[in-house]
Structures are given as structure tokens and as C-alpha cells.
Length: 362
Ligand code: SF4
Image (cartoon, rainbow, N blue to C red; front, side, top):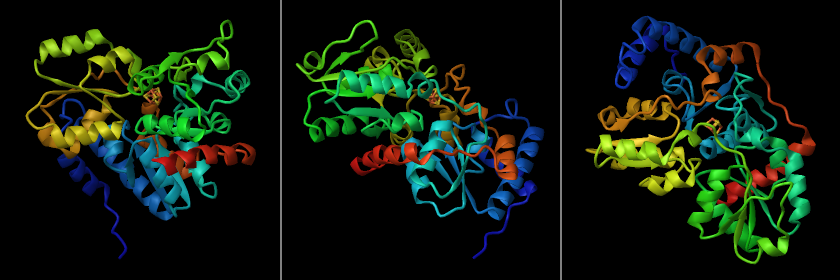
């Protein structure tokens, strides 16, 4: 059966019902919703004409998140969707490394990222030359790279991981390579959180001071790197104390990209999908603070309006890279086939091995 295309008036009526649950008219007035409904309608029509699929990360702004994506989720879920799709074009409403991962997994498809400004402070925090240096210093230790890395970094990696499976992947790497210690990069804070979870030591080599491989394998050790997510590092233990003071009994959920002293004061830590699952299953009758990109709370409330009063938002903490993706640019991406993501075969093939290894483990 061919689905009938919604008119912009119908999209507008739907947005008014869905989005008004979480976003009052004072924040997004009706005339703006009408304008966005027109964009949504054009995007849906072009998507159909061009046989495209749109993937939307959990951090997309609410109107985009709840209208145009065929699939929504975290990096791991969207990677799986990208690998499976039969569409001719994949439009990735997320950041650049995610679109690269889609291309790595499904190279015959045209992959588009709607904005060239959609970078990531973690992905920019490590370069291939850094991995070459680490390999030289620690030739027998596996390199586990967070999915938030560029394709050329993944190509020098043994296995990738996401925030949802990092502990599982590191435990796997220790066993598979039969070593007590693992290089994990680039997230400094996640390295600390994993070391705590798996009772491993933590060590950060620098150009000026490098322990030998024998020294870092005396005890199980995570050898980390010094990149940070500029969004999650804004959360502090003081902020958690302030929330607990203002909302006694509040439950604090934190993303593993937050610093270890923040995770230590939180009640739950997990990926964006794990946080969403926790909130929707356990959130009734509780005040909950989500220590992650602010849009996620609005996106949860739109489908679970009963939680609107329960979620404490800290909307000064936003990701400028994720918010570089707009409906306007998504429309232009489909109109003009921009901006296409291409990866040389010499990089794509080894990067695919590292990503598929992760997918097989989790
Ligand atoms: S929230 Fe942090 S990790 Fe995610 S894209 Fe933005 S800078 Fe990168």
C-alpha cells in the first residue's frame, strides 16, 4: 500500500498536538510551527521521491526529531539501521563521525550530512598520528576507540565501542588479545569511568612522560587519551548538590561522557538510549535530572507527556554541533545532495573491521 503524503496543514495540526505537550507556545509560537510544518512536508516529499532514509540522533531539536527521521536513537542503534537500509540515500541528522560510520557500513549508498559544522569535540581531540605513536609505545596492547572518532582513527583501531557497550568491549578486548591492559581513546572521562567500573588502573601517557609497556601491564590498566566532550564536561558535583537541594529525592541520570566525580554522585549512568529507557520505565512520580544534551528531555516528553513535570532540564547545556543540523539544512541536503560523505577504500575497509567487531560483540 502506498502511504499518502501528509500536507503541510496536516503536519501543522499533528505538530500542534504532539509538540505542545513539551514545548509551550511561548517557546515555539504557532506561526513558527506552521513554517516548520511546510519544511517537514517538503522534506517528506523529497525523501519519498529520492528513496532516502533519514536517521535522527537523540540530541536533535524536538521538531526535527519528531517529524522527519525514519529511525531515531543513539550511535549504536543508528549504525545498525545504516548497515541494514535498502534506501539509495542516507541523510544523517547527527554529527559527522556518525555519517562516516554509516558510509563505512554501507558504502554503496550515498550518505549525506546536512551541515559541515556538525563536528564533535571528542572526534576532533585525536588524530591518526596519535594512534601511530601509541602503537609504537605499546605494540602488544589492543586499541579500543569510542565511536566518536573519525574514520581515519577507526582505521587504526582494533575494535570500536559506544557508551552503551564500552565495558563489554573492553572486557572482550582483554580476553581476546590475552592482555591485562587496553588503550582506550579518546574520551578522558569515559576512560576514568570504565576504569572505575572494571576496577582497572588509569594512566594517561604524554609526549614528555611515557611508562613502558611492562609498567602499564603490571596491573590491569586503561591507557587513556585527553579528549573531552565539551557538553558533558560542564556538569559538576556542585551542580548535582544544587539539584538535590532544590529537588529533594530527585534521581540523577548521567551520561558516561561526564567526569568520574559527577558519575560518582549520580544514581544511574548509561547511554542516551539507556537513560531514555530508564526514564520511561521508572520515571512516574519522580523528579529526574538528565545530565546530557538538553534536547533529549524535550524529545522524551513529546512521546511521554505524563513525564513533563518530572524532568528537570538544564538547557544552558547544549551541543552546538548537534544543533548545526536544522530542518532547513535537511531540506537542502535532499534538494542538492549535500554534503556527501566519502571515505577512501584504504581507510574504509580497516575501519569497517573495527566497527563490525563491535557490532558482533554487542
Ligand atoms: S554532545 Fe559531546 S560527544 Fe556528542 S556530538 Fe556534541 S561534543 Fe560530540
